[in-house]
Amino acid sequence: MSLLRVASKPCLSSSGTLLIWLPTVIMQAKPHPCSESSDSCTPATTPQLILLCTALIMIAVGYGGVTSSSLAFGADQLKHFQNNASKIESYFSWSYATSSFSAIVGSVGLVYLQENYGWRIGYGVLVALVLFAVLTFFSGSVWYLRLNPTKNLVNGLFKVMVASYRNRNIKLFSGDTELEYHSKGSTLSHPSGKLRFLNKACIIQDPERDLNGEGTAVNPWKLCTVDQVEELKSLIKIMPIWITRIVMSLNTCQGSFAVLQATSLDRHIGSKFQLPAGSVSSFALVFIVAWIILYDRILLPLASRIRGKTVHFSTKSRMGCGVFISFLSMAAMATMEGIRRAVAINEGYENNPDGVLHMSILWVLPQYALMGFAEGLNAISQNEFYISELPKSMSSIASSLYMLSMAIASLLSSFLMTTINNLTNRGGKESWISSNINKGHYDYLHWVLAGLSITNFLFFLAFSKAYGPLKDEKFEAQGTAEDGKA
Image 1 (cartoon, rainbow, N blue to C red):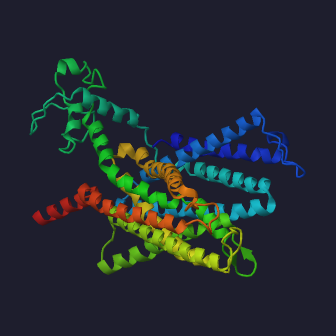
Image 2: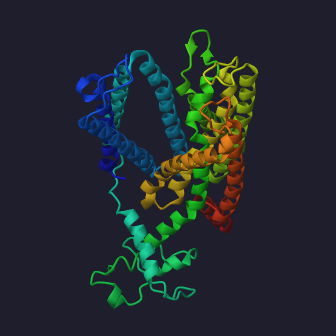
Image 3: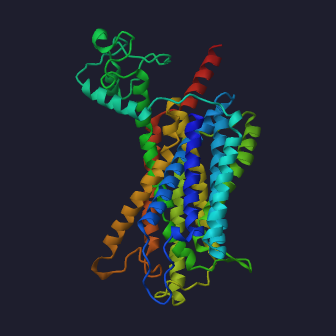
């Protein structure tokens, strides 16, 4: 991952944040305020809309680029360390902890500033923080390990699919009788035996016809290297486990419900501080950070001291625990919502969704604690799994898969909500996801999510078993076998 490619993304995101802030200080960059005496508002002009859309696009592209490249770039800096697996595990843990802490600052601190001091101060502080982050990144550039940028991997993956289809009539034989096409410096002698139909993409049928004078493929859409074939196989192999992350992410895409639920509860913490309803999700983030500190600084060192050697829990075991705890969090959320709804009806708030119950916001702590532990286990190990299992040349793709699963889950969540709404409001009935949280049945919704989660856990167990041993486990087994021979 090249430094220039990584550095361009935060610069783009910070520029977009600056553009978002401009309308708060330049009156001409935003529509006139709505009149309090009438319901009419002045619509935004075309230049104002262009400014807003440009800012949002820059932030989205920049943030997406940062999340997809920063993890891979950081992992590259640890390539020459001994005990690389534990170093990478710790790196991913603290990277996620830092992101969670930043989200806490944003959902609590910045929301508080915007509510009490206005958008100008709130966005101004955000711009200052983003610029500080960019300057901090560049300040360490002299110590970064610089790697040459890799080829277009996505293009190479498509070439393998096209080439294997075009060569579909080639017959594969057992053994090493085929002549395969290798890239220069490749360490792979032959393609693996799994997904053998893709091996047809790297078979040289006629050297004089398929290769030019330099020994490279005449048509890269008909003849690919063994490395390219194995890259596509690696990506296909992890897809089932990646899909379980999409299903799990559905549970974290219920932000609007969290706000509705928090609005109906007593949000006072202490005698003076009232937690903003939009900040209730910060509870889960706090538990994520707490879990990472507990796991990385207490549990792992303690287990290593007891065993007398460095202890490293496999990514699959941590992912599986996270998926199961995600089910527990949905069950807890459904139970809590059932209790809250019963209290609302008993206190006479069935037709008043804005009423505040005699029920503390602290009642939601168990569900967010479980959600935080689930995310802390699964999200970190997912990123680590992709980086360690995919070839090094695919590190940028590996670090993009987690955020891609979140994006797909967000779209699926919208589809799921629409489907449930259409199914439950038939015959004039109140929808489960009614805007009146006291009349709806959000507890039923979360029992549905709990059912999906436990099904997802069973699928994860099956996919994990079918995947076989991890690369680290294979190397450890080989090392043990060699020590036994010695």
